[in-house]
Image (cartoon, rainbow, N blue to C red; front, side, top):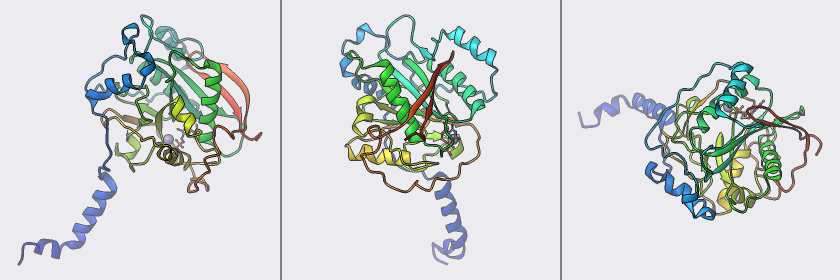
Length: 321
Ligand code: UDP
Ligand code: MN
């Protein structure tokens, strides 16, 4: 009997174990920003704000600080009490009261008919973000027509409409957009919701995917992008109707534009995904869209804009194109 006799006699068991291991937990190699370099990376991504002493920086949150995720649906009263307690401005805007924040972030959420998830989301996010010392706002972009859901188009609308409202800020040209699914709840306060030097894929470790990155090029779920970077790639493609494809296409656009995608470490980038039925994959998900479609080609009409206590909701009709 040689050294590998066990393998020879049990090779099928061995192969099965390897395959199971690969499918479940293979740690795809991807680079991350070390935790102690996060602060410096964030600051250097905002060169227009060189005089840091005049601003308040984000709270330094070294190490892992896990926050509890509460999945019970809050009542309306609880939500309005929360807005009052945290001093959230109408439309879902918040800023630190004692100093001007270095970072201004807009959380844009593509949305249609998930009212319970929306309540859980806005409660969790305000509790979470108001501890990070950022200036932020939450914008929900609701697809009001009955066409196939179009995540890319909705996120583009959220970007364009918010830029119209906020206008360009010469003092802070690096406004940060965080494109964020409604069912993802960050679990670690060290996951700062501001833009780093390159676009940052934030939802690295998601509960529904066993907290493992499914493939290295993924940028879906939650993604932080600075205004100028999003404009350079013409935003999301808009012809991926139905589930899937638009996020991978944006990832290709970043590469083509010479941008690389950054990540924080997996234990910082942890998210709980609220349970939902898996959508039927869209027929268009494997195509490759032309760069000419995106922010510049988007046709839509805004039906109304509602400012609630915890968020701004843009109701949009995408079918009018
Ligand atoms: N979404 C929505 N209503 C829908 C479909 C999608 O609000 O009918 C939004 C919601 O923000 C959701 C995101 O689009 O989190 C991505 O869709 P989904 O959660 O189905 O994708 P998956 O988690 O399967 O990638
Ligand atoms: Mn989901």
